[in-house]
Length: 268
Image (cartoon, rainbow, N blue to C red; front, side, top):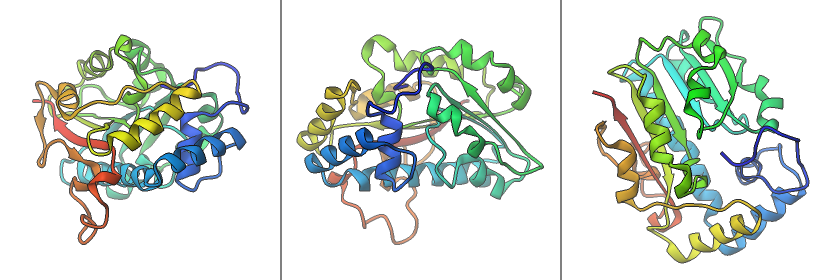
């Protein structure tokens, strides 16, 4: 995950705050706005792309809670609180739902109370840990007090693995997070790609890299590696705006304006 658990730095652009800025949030600083504006000059569709990713997450969580009966969620790389958060969606379907948010960003930690105001019937918790250290995530006392790892869990890894380079072994990290989860658990992921607008997305990636945030964008075949051994939920691996779109919304966004694959899969 971009950033680390050290000093709170507002003088350098940060991926989570850029995301917040482009989604219309309030938790960002001049370097984040400068970076976001630079990216939009390279690819004006970037805010559309980011909103489509957030909308996909909302739909995926709602379907997991409503149709798959999932009552536990482990969200890796949660980012800044952005309503509706996962617990708000899940607990609207089932008030007893439990959610653990995981991030390694000091700003997220400072604002984590916004992730913890859930339904009295359910539970929410925040864990400061890194996707690259699955053992620290799974061994956290807050996680073990909140989730029952003997019952199905939905692992959500959303718009984060493109910040993990090859040496970080993103596929291996996700698999290690899935290993202790029982049959009937789910993996919901969105994965950055340059398959549909390679020139424009490449320029956005260069802006990130210039600010110390190199990216590893993945093809559809590379995205599929995360789901090896799992049963993909139809329609499988597709661009996020094409994954169970709301009625009437599926054709409102152009394919070339979306640089994210999304998929949900069940652990057999």
